[in-house]
Length: 266
Image (cartoon, rainbow, N blue to C red; front, side):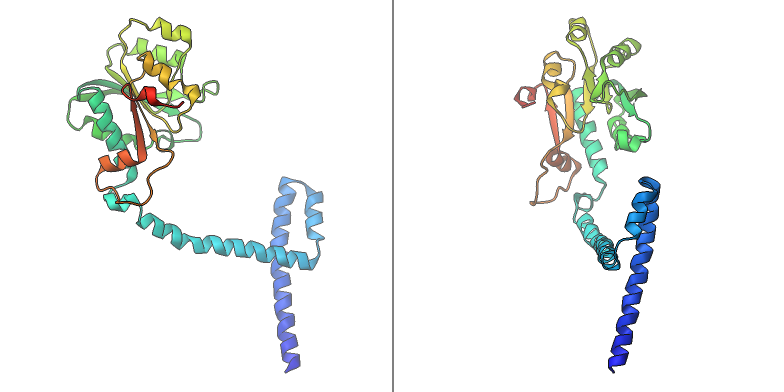
């Protein structure tokens, strides 16, 4: 009986050693490609006991990741998506369209600006764009004249370059409003002064994270921008799930207009 136990233990130990050696050979190959041959050789000459422990830890991490999938799925089931009966991006787009429509009195021409960034498609740079356009034009009073792509400018990562904004005004003197997924205008004091007394279109935008460098207050005071929406830093927790797109939008997004811009802390 003792011989059988010893044999089983030996087999298990050999199995663990073979497995851990296989894992380390793979890791060493990856390390060789990334760091160099010397570091890979150091890994392979590590003691068998250490190899076994590290290999088991890696397996544990993988198993935990797999086991977390059902939890993630259950969290999605209880998300506002199913409570609403529609995708949250649809609700946000409907809410933004509602705000822009009010800004334009439900009529007029609008230009849409979308950021063009290498490696990212419109779903990333302009989430829910198609839903937004459909909701905005559904009543027939608002016409989208163009969806214009704005190249990403490394010199102005936080918004629409001032030169681009002024060029757009010159190219589209007849639009009543501009909606931007490409950020807020980044204007110098001189550029702002050059617009004083001129008739410019109402400017609305969806941004991700507002900050002081965007000069939101200053742009509202100069009447350059008129509406800004962005996700709330702390969405509500608990309570009754939203049952309408408007409820979802108001719970998860902030809306800044000239009426409340002065209360901003940035």
